[in-house]
Amino acid sequence: MTAPAPQRTTLDLIGNTPLVLLKGPSEAAGCEIWGKCEFANPGASVKDRAALWIVRDAEARGELKPGGTVIEGTAGNTGIGIALVCNALGYKAVIVMPDNQSKEKMDTLRALGAELVTVPPTKFADPNHFVHTSRRLAAETEGATWANQFDNIANRKSHIESTAPEIWQQLEGRIDGFTCAAGTGGTIAGTGMGLKAFDESITVALTDPYGAALYNYYAHGELKAEGSSVAEGIGQGRITANLEGAPIDTQFRISDEEGLEWVRRLLSEEGLCLGLSSGINVAGAVELGRNLVGEGKRDARVVTILCDTGFRYLSSLYNREWLEAKGLPVFPWLAS
Image 1 (cartoon, rainbow, N blue to C red):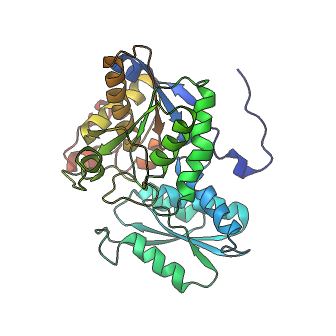
Image 2 (image 1 turned 120 degrees about the vertical axis):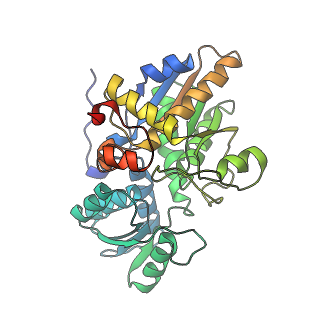
């Protein structure tokens, strides 16, 4: 075993996450399915990368000054990343999030010292949407900068400059496909762009939950949503600035039930406790792997993102009553 290199600052702990071969998904796909362990970041999610790049970008532009405040609207994970980065750099964090997100995310933000503002969930066109509320707060607060993760391309730049090169190096340049879901679009667009800069032939696939509009957009050119999903932090109804020019080659639509099955299997068979977005990503990776094998690439390698830890969803995804109320299958060990 090789020990991780020592780091000079705590912010250097963001990124350089492990990549692991997933046994069950690989067997199901007939090729190698690898998971990028973003839950290993200090804030336990992939969003730490975007948080760091967004804050550093605001500093570089002279918008964020010593003692300033970073304000953001988020489903939770970006807020947690921003709170940690702000703590390390001496800034304040104000986080606006929908009040239907997990209790664990809200409790974590408060524990980290962020100011938490919750608003009712609503459509993006509503001026009271959490994103618009955060923008107004930033405009009204002296010394504040609005992180604007959805349309701030420092977000996708974090994946062009870190996630993609890490994957390329970890697999020694042998990768055939990459897929993940889109929330802001930063991860799939940035990682896709970065990987294609190494090898244009890599297939980049969108894995979209029901209730989002991007599957229909990339398949048929129309932003149209169908169904619904309880997954937090993924699913988008518009083309954000981060998604503009995203190199999407193909797309899959994955149900919550499919995603939950992989959440169940990865925990019970491989010891990984993950959120539903990770399960949906893995289901998409299996589909992409099967497609590549069907095209004759029998030794294909596909990478996806394991977005965050399941410990963030103990009151929802890992709670029998919550699953039953949503009409979702209950994990066997919770049923007794």
